Structures are given as C-alpha cells and as structure tokens.
Image 1 (cartoon, rainbow, N blue to C red):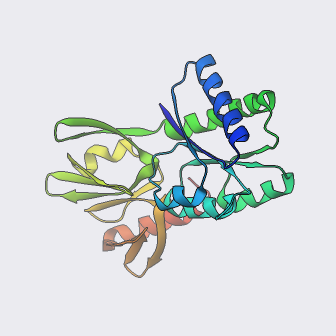
Image 2 (cartoon, helix red, strand yellow; image 1 turned 90 degrees about the horizontal axis):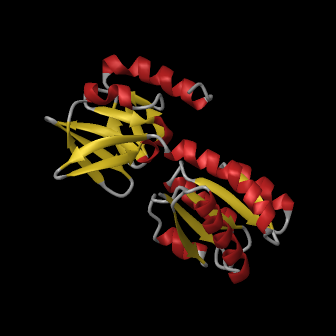
Image 3 (cartoon, rainbow, N blue to C red; image 1 turned 180 degrees about the vertical axis):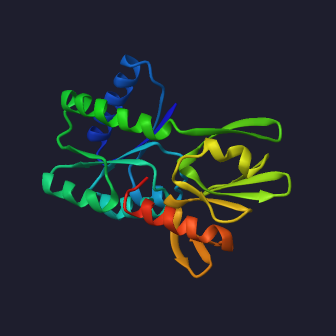
Length: 234
C-alpha cells in the first residue's frame, strides 16, 4: 500500500493525475491510497507523516507549492516530492526541498505514465525499509525513515516518531542489525536517526525538538558518523 497525496487546486489537473495513478496501479498490480488536497495550507496544518509520495502544484492560493514543500520538509524528510508546474523554470526551486522530479502542465497522460516508472521505482526503494516490532497485542511494520530515535526504558524500547511513540519489548543490541547506517547510538539509552538531528552542542544532540544527552564513551564515534552522514558518506 502506497499513500499518495495530490495537492492541486485545478480540478482537471487533479483528475488527470489521479486517473493516471489509478491506471498505473492497476497495470502494475500495486495498491494506491490517493487523497486530493485542493488547499496546501490546510494540508500543512493537519499534516501527518503518513504519505509516501506527494504531487505538489506550485501555483496555488494561500500558499505556494514551494512554501508548502518547505513546511513539509521540516516535518517529514523522507516523503518523495514531485512538483507540478506550467513553467519549467519553477522546477529549479525544487532543489531547495529535495524534490525528486517535476511534471509540466498541461498534464499529459502518456508523459505522466513514463514519469511514474521512475518515480515509483524511487518511492519503492525508500518505503521498503521497515522494522517489525511487537507492541501490546499488535505487530507493526515501522518505516525506518519515520523513526526519530529509539529509547531504552527498562526491558522496553520506545520508538519515537512524529505522530506517536510505540512501545515494544527489546534491547538496543537486539535491533542493532535491523537499523540502517543512518542510525547511530549516542548512549546506552538512545539510538538516533541522523536524518532528524538538528544540532550538536557540547554533550547534547537536538533530534527535532528533543534534546538528548550524548554518553562520553559514545561521543567520538557519533560525531564521526554524523560528519560522514552530513557529507553523504552514508
């Protein structure tokens, strides 16, 4: 299941994109959940990190697509963004928000189908990384890109995401091999997703809005790993 948002105020363009997505899913035996948002501002105000792919119109009332994309990136670094615009030069602005691709208006079915092959190959590679945890009475597959950090709490692990905290039995050692290289331990109690590290000051690291302490014996290894991550080493 792929969750897809179409942020487009033009009814015809939205319909064309959604029809192409539906046709593509059927042809490739995929399951899409598609939601249309005609107003970017309302989407931002109620945003949850549950989308895998967002088609974003650039020219909209209340808030431009670029402004909306910047707001989304502050909340969700992993979602794939695709701009929809009637002027190719606007697509350049996508680099600032790490947009994966752009689609020119008027939206053409054939051209969009060709684009979707590349887009969905990318989305599939980013969504595919999951870690399975057992909470009380439920087994959940968490997308690793949406986890801020993992915290030890006695015999339990607390999995912190933007929207909620999941709790499971386990130890950091038991999950070490399941996490990608973008994760790094900062103490006996915390493993952080470096994707969400905002700053490192002294012995503290800011993960989104949460300040966590770096253990003395972990500091050198973490700083080295973070420096490599920032220059694209992982």
